[in-house]
Image (cartoon, rainbow over all chains, first blue to last red; front, top):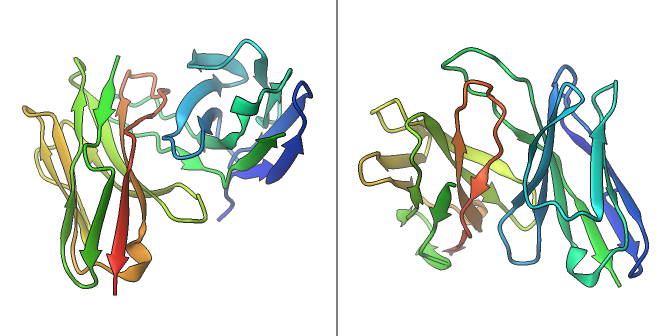
Length: 117
Length: 117
């Protein structure tokens, strides 16, 4: 079965540079979530999109922006990179079922490891 | 806001033995889901088991089972017949059900489990 694809898998940037992370959800999935996991930390929710509209916002810095495109893939744009942005960035996708008792599992991609030097 | 607490940063268990990982959470929601995720050295996030809050019966998945105590807001994971491949970081996670089905995961800080031969 197709899984969530993230690219690149590894990225090395210098301070103050910009980075773009891409996420391709499982086919037919309409929702994308972005999480940031710092070294030795738990994943922290950044932002999510449903049907190309931002649906929820977490602890995403103002230097970061994201969007979901018409083909449902999503991109996380990071500017003015700081050393503290070094982390593993996960994308997860789900297919929203509007049923009251439904469960919308989030399927995680392999992550993009960003290193800021 | 929801919080998830894992009070055991590290645990170890002998191969073939049983181990229990603890998790407590705080929420005012009545309808929600709880999860245990496994993160091996590859850093992939793997769903181990989930529990719907409206179900009284504890979830089980092969060697993995949970003890869900809704009133106490406790959600522990029991791993039976521990195997070397169970060595990983384990995250407890909470997701509220809003009816929109589109809510992010809130993770605990994790418990690093080592299975010893």
